[in-house]
Image (cartoon, rainbow, N blue to C red):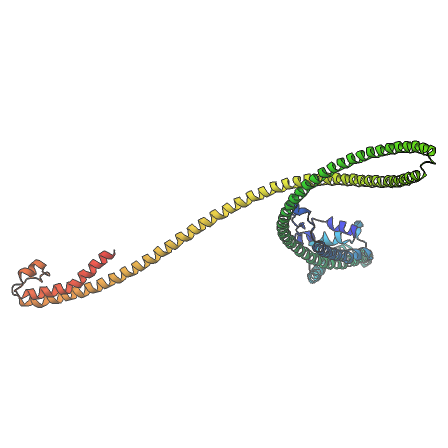
Length: 510
């Protein structure tokens, strides 16, 4: 599949490559670097293995499909015994199939129709040419025969002309055979090219479907990458919280260890003092034992002297000598027993000394290890504090932005509610004003009608009235209260009173 892939990739400017859809590059899932201690926490191997196995399976499936397409449409064409084209051309799918697809991208029915029409036109033109040539030749023959006098000369001329025509016919037949061979070769070439064209079309369709699958695979990979990034972010948050809890636990444990180390130091100092005291006691006991041995030597010397004296006075003090001998034997046994006890105590003290020295060495090693762990932990704690400070700054910045946006949104909402209330109140006022205007217009019309009726009624009876009089004022009504016209003016005031009331209420409303 290696050389076939190289052949397919070597033709980027052909019509096939132009027709294929552009395949976007496979983007790797975005890796979110998290520079915290949570990076050292191992990700579950099962999830990673499942994602990698699914991606590998999809990639293997797509590569297998591409190899199948190349094997079916490239290797078969190379293995077929095709017709050798002139000028050393080959029937490979890359050179003659895909590169010349624009030239061969014609349906076989169109090719057949075009070939039939061209053959008919060629036959018609050849017949016309033959007729024209025969006419010219006949005229030339007639002219040559007319020039000849005897019929024998005419026959010889006709025979020569016939021989020339036979030679021309043989030459034309030879040319026709050569052309027929060329035509058969061309027909075979066209059939082969049609087959290659159909195979190229099938390969293109399959490659297009494969490209679509690749695009789908890329989209799924992108979605998986984003989903994994979200999952990893959630895991990172969980791990950071867990790490904070563990940090608190470690701090508590460190405090406990510090207290324990202090207590151990005190115990070690006490043990060292005890060891010093034991060593001093051991030295004192050795001195005491030396003194006891010296005392025993002196006693032995005294005993020897006493023995000598006893030998001299043996006869005189046998009873006494026996008593002293028994006493001395007892003292010797006790001294030997005391000596053995002191030796055992010495061995035991030496064993205790070796044990204490081993414990002291172990304690020193543990102290050095704990100091190293404490230094490394301090460094990690400093790094974590720096990163936590950065994250806290970012959180405060985003929180301030969020609060400012919330405040602006609340202000906008309050302004909108106030504007809506004002708009509703204005609409209600406008409706009320419209109703009042209509009511006033109706009352004005009614009042004008009543005024006209009242002015026409009494005005006709009064003599010398040239024109209808205007409605009298309040002063006129008071002055002419006893006249007949006072009744009509009172009626007018009664009628106009509600209109004035409505007008004043309208002004108060405004």
